[in-house]
Amino acid sequence: MPATPQITDVVIIGAGPVGLFAVFELGLLDIKAHLIDVLDRPGGQCAELYPEKPIYDIPAIPVVSGQQLTEQLMEQIKPFHPAFHFSQMASSLEKTAHGWRVTTDAGTVIDAKVVVIASGGGSFTPKKPPIKTITEYEGKSVFYAVRNKDSFKGKNLVIAGGGDSALDWTIALQPLVESLTLVHRRDEFRAAPHSVAKMRELVFAGKVKLEIGNLSDLRGQNGQLTAAVLSTSEIACDALLAFYGLTMKPGPVAGFGIEMKDGLISVNTENFETSTPGIFAIGDINRYPGKLKLILSGFHEAALMAQKAFRYVHPERKWRFEYTTSSSNLQEKLGVK
Image (tube, rainbow, N blue to C red; front, side, top):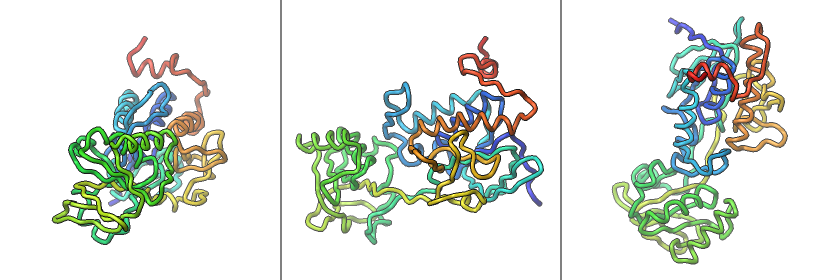
């Protein structure tokens, strides 16, 4: 027997930072939201891939971790009582007489007037070093993300990669570990220039060892590493962090009948609506001229999206923009007079 639909104003597919902030912007306009996420908790990539990685470009917050940002966003949207559907994937979307019906792979059915896709890069999996035996060590001494940086205290650590994640964690973990070797296939890096400069300072000071080469094999027993093997050398270690990037897939949204190109959803820049009226895309999943894949850009997109969503959800009401400092709805929710 089909599940009874849950009714709300807006369904947000994705509970990462941009999806969470969308709840706030919608809430200011008295719009209720349900969120669907394939992960078992809020935060998206921030929670899954770099919960303790420092983020520096959130306005007015000099530095914040992915986990802290998620917690603060959850606190910010608490007055609007969003409903979450975790560990579920939005598997189908269909038009109804009053809007849209989203069904998840867990059988949850939600009816709403607006759908907002904030699913980041979609489903993501880490790219792995091409080593046949690597699965034997995964989760024990080989990792693709840092869940708790204290777990690397006193370790002889190898970090493989040449992008931002590899260098950021080289800098962040160096004070905690017994030894740290950064491995990259060439002496050129794709990371931010200041991170590259800081890494080279640590190498010059003898606090980090830099090895140029490719990982070719691993040594160890019962999932515990004893060495990482390069084409020309062998590095004694008991932990490996591999940052080879991510493979992104748009997931089921690719079958929603929305205009896409190269796995990204095309939107306008007035309100980030897709080719289908009533469906919006914000954050890393969308594409438009001049797009920057930054969290703060996604926040801006969420704010403009909410203004247009208001006209679908409350067509009978006169639209009136309110600054957050004077929003009667927010003041009422927070009990502020």
